[in-house]
Length: 423
Image: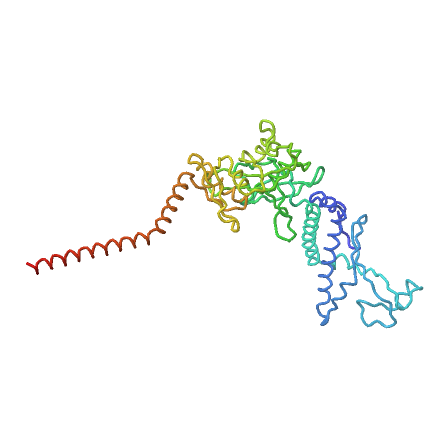
């Protein structure tokens, strides 16, 4: 047996440090020792022209936790005459220790190298493989623990900054160990203060399965899923499916720093006795205020969904008052929305944010128009069309008038000529 001093203590410390069960740590150590022994075995057989790769499928490493060491065990077949020492052993040799052995039986042999023979090279290989196997074990456990939680919300705590990302500590539930998660710059909120140990809710966007460096979990504060969760958590009618969230449009990181984050959420109900918008807002805004506070003051518009596109579009442009919605091309989903002059800037929103979110929410291309100017333009277009239609008749009348005048002038000229001849 090769001695591994402090093996029990090593397993315990790795288990606590990496939040891995002892069984997983033992499996990683066993795999690392197997790789180390393979390295040792190859070094011992460099002079062999045809090295038997199948030999490595024929042995295993056995950990002795109490004895703090390990053994290498090889399975060989009992034969009369040995032709391959890696896979076979003679009957005479086996019967010296096991008289009952017979030809064709398999026997497990201790082929553990001497303590010194294992060598620094194999030991270094073992350490490198152990580190990799522990990382693999940890990533596998994180994946199994969190893969079913993708698309849900977790409680997070700020650990540190890495470049523009924030590294957070999250858990899958009460009493579970903390796991690192990455909050990229694009998924952060401009009003958040990511000081050390600050806590807030995050949306679990992705659980990576690859071997890349860094946290395996990617979370978000900017995803619309976070808004949906917060409302569902705060509004019992949503949890009870009396009120349903039909659509959400969110702009958590506006293109301009002069425009703040904003969300529009469309809700509906089949219960005539329930006001879905009022249920989400709550008495004196108590429910929506909880959501706003969690999102650090983000502006939220809750509007009533409607199966009628015109009504839905008008509602989506809230808080602006809409005079008329004209569905110009339902097939390509283009519409003109008419508002009074004093509602024009409100309907469009600062740097176009209100109409942009309304378009995302409804799925329609919305063109905001001033009602008065739109009517005047329509009148001008109508007048121009009538004028264009009547223009040929007017041209014909003008030609007729000119021809009649020319005939009259010719007749007068002939009369004057006749008068001169008579004189």
